[in-house]
Length: 459
Image 1 (cartoon, one colour):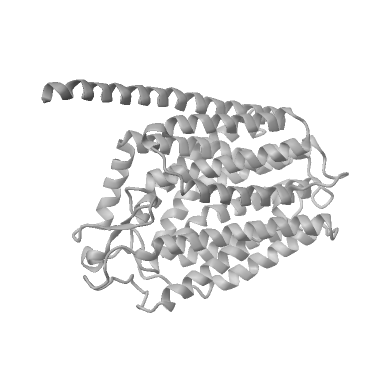
Image 2: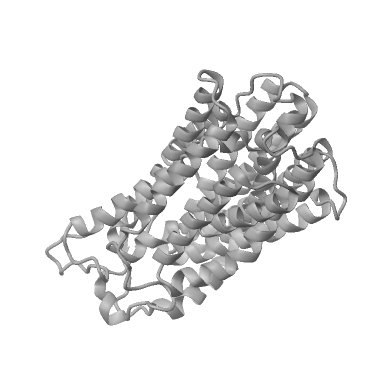
């Protein structure tokens, strides 16, 4: 933590009470909630379950009529949930998330028919939209100088939960021979445990918009987090939190560098959501799972593990992202496009699996760099707003793409044609950023030459 403790008393967040256990207890409870909420061993086998004898749905119903409902509901609920999260002070929305997921998996066990499964997808969209409450709750409980630490704890807990769930699902299916219905029972049980834990979370006394604290209460201890170095710097004591949110938002999007990373964030996240949503459908078409062994759980676990390693490594790489960032985005976006293209055209399930892992790892690496670049000059509370806007734009684009390409009321294309479009989509992103990156580099070198040519004259 930056700064000597003897200079001035450390400000504690409202409701923290001052003791170390007062941040450790809610952080521990939230991590436990995130872990158990993420242990869903049935999720990597969802498509197989819906197409199998338990639900007996057709491929067209699953891919073109059911899965798009998640996209529409996520977009429709994101803004209302964002406002409700702040107004209700987080905990009620965390409880709503747990309840939504319980309803989702209960219906996954017992609901039958197309309309019922579409309703299920709506509740799953609600559970996804309420993620914002989970990731922002802790900021209203702990001191601001603990934000980076508790954020890493919460994200690590959810990642570990997904990995445990994916590995457990694969082992139980491949080794123990459990049914997919049994995996859904385990998922429902784990989510129910998480929901029970959420009730013990303390109720925050402040929030970002509706219940923000005054500048007098914030005092000298308002800090801005540097996401590259992990250090903190002192903010001015007279800063007003709420009015500065809009100013920070405008400043971020008025900067060409920040705008570049934000545009990539929105465009690529749109394509990323589409690929991971329909990857199981592609695998099912390449190799039907009813007659052979599948390894969806192992693939998901491997992608998360390797993604976590890539994220860790990129955090220690020193590079001039302001100069080479756009070219980097172009290069890796092209690799993403190539991975999706191979996944679509090489009709071998193991090639599909490997390409999917490469796709997810590259995306996790790039989205981490984008996070660093956008967040460097913004406080944690403020860049959450910018990230929310980027995600909203991504969902709006995804909704448009889903409506045109996937939905039965649109073109309703088959899964292989869809993935060819997604590969072309990432290739287009690569070309756009390649052109922009070359322009930026040429402009920087010309500026440098002009400065060097003028320096002898100035002497």
